[in-house]
Structures are given as structure tokens and as C-alpha cells.
Image (cartoon, rainbow, N blue to C red; front, side, top):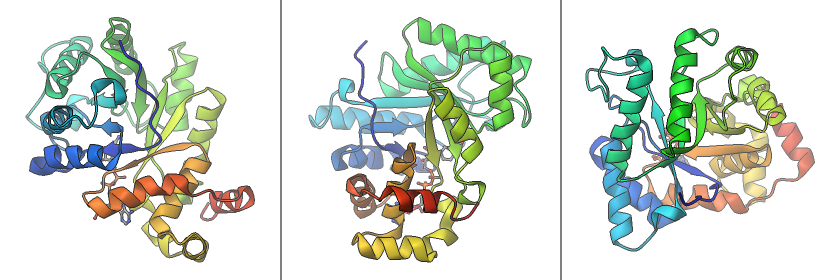
Length: 275
Ligand SMILES: NC(=O)c1ccc[n+]([C@@H]2O[C@H](COP(=O)([O-])OP(=O)(O)OC[C@H]3O[C@@H](n4cnc5c(N)ncnc54)[C@H](OP(=O)(O)O)[C@@H]3O)[C@@H](O)[C@H]2O)c1
């Protein structure tokens, strides 16, 4: 298995339906090397992401080994009728069926990261989660995923997962609200346990903040947009950001934000700007 480099930005493919293939290819042409998807037809068209990858391979833009591909297993309650597994099967078998289907969609032998889309319960790490996690570990050990992750988790989920003796994830992917200190509690847990924190909805969950003077002033100072400052700030505090932009200019701007260096004292101030 080739080891893909850890990308500095992930391109998210949710909610793009028929535009998924074209936008995935466009994102690769723009320079994104991390692609986030899920085998959840309700919100993602994973086969479309695979078509975009195939087009980029054919055009010679990237090779599989240049990429970081991430997909997710989603419990039935997060799906519509278009299930990627047999709902009557045990969840451990559903995990295997879901990943096999993802690999087919993506035209890949393995994914770089396989993520539990969300725990079974809003509070606590349940027996079902333990069974799913064990099945995900088996898929990883069989070479079908390099790393594992969990998404939409609270600190309680992570602490209970740890207390259960489970292997901890390589990634946490969460919605990142500035008013919660940019998910401070979960990020602290991640830092302490060598887990890479992936943040989504950095713009949409914090839209009011983009007009907040510190972001507007910094943007002016760096000749950047407030959105670019948010992404640069995220990187500075160790967040691996996701963007799902459908706009070529925003793709360019989002990647260009990687060049912005915000001074440490300002990063500290921005970290508590809203919580
Ligand atoms: N694990 C989960 O449960 C979960 C949940 C939600 C999302 N995700 C993942 O995260 C990805 C990103 O989702 P998201 O919730 O962060 O929202 P998003 O789909 O990235 O939407 C971001 C919004 O910000 C705008 N935008 C992006 N770059 C911009 C820029 N430079 N300047 C101004 N506006 C900009 C976009 O508009 P334009 O299109 O016009 O640029 C869009 O309206 C998804 O595709 C998915 O892969 C995961």
C-alpha cells in the first residue's frame, strides 16, 4: 500500500449531486490532494467522486499515491433508502459491505482514512459503536484502510471510547463552532492523544464571525478575505480544515490561505474571540 502524504486541506464532496464528478476533478486540478466523501447517498454521491478521480487520473493530474482519500461508514439512521449494505446484517458485516462498496465507487484498493460518521447515540460510546469500531479495525488490518477516524463526537464520546479500552482514532472530524472555543474540549483531547482534528463548517457555522472586526482587520492587513483568515487561523491552531466550495476562485483562495501566517499572539486572541 502506498502511503499518501497528509494533505494540508481536505476537499469535501457533500451536497454536490450531479456536480460531484466535475467539482472533484476541478478541486484536484486546483491543487487539493485530500478528498472527503461518505457512503451515504443522502448527502454524498460517492460514485461521482470516483468519476472525478478517474478523470483526473486519465488527464495525468494526479496518481492514486498522491492522494488522501477518506470515506465514512454511516449507521442506517443517518441514511435514506439507498443503503450501501444489507440492513438485516450485523453492523460488523454492514461495515465490511459499506467499505467494499466505497472502494468500488472510488476505484481504489484502499482508502487513507475510514471514518465512523457518527456514534449510535448522542451521548456515550455504545456496544454498537464498539462492534462497528472493531469491524473497522479489521478492515484496516486487512489493508483496506490506512487510518481510522470518528466524526460528530463529543468529549464524552471520546472519553468513554478511551475508558472502554478501544484503540483511539487517528482522526476526529467535527463541526467547528467558534462560540465553543472552536470545539476546544475535543481539540484538547485530540492534542493530548495524538489525534488529528479535522474541522468542517468553519465558515458556515461561524458566518457572523467573518464580519467580526479582528477577522476583517486581519484580512485587510494580509490582503486576504475573512474566509482565508479563518482557514489560516484553523491551520495555526492545528485544525486540518475542510472546504466544500463549488467555486473555482474560492478553491484557489482556500488553498492560498495556506501561505498566510498569523502571529502567535493574534492566534491566541482569535481562539477565544467567541467563546
Ligand atoms: N462528518 C460530517 O458529518 C460532515 C458534515 C458536514 C460536512 N462534512 C464535510 O465537510 C465538507 C465541507 O462542508 P462545510 O459544512 O464546511 O460547508 P461547505 O460545503 O464547504 O460550504 C462552505 C460555504 O462556504 C463558501 N465558501 C467556501 N470557500 C469560500 C471562500 N474562500 N470565500 C467565501 N465563501 C467560501 C461556500 O460557497 P461557494 O461554494 O460559493 O464557495 C459554501 O457556501 C463537506 O463537503 C463534507 O465533506 C462532514
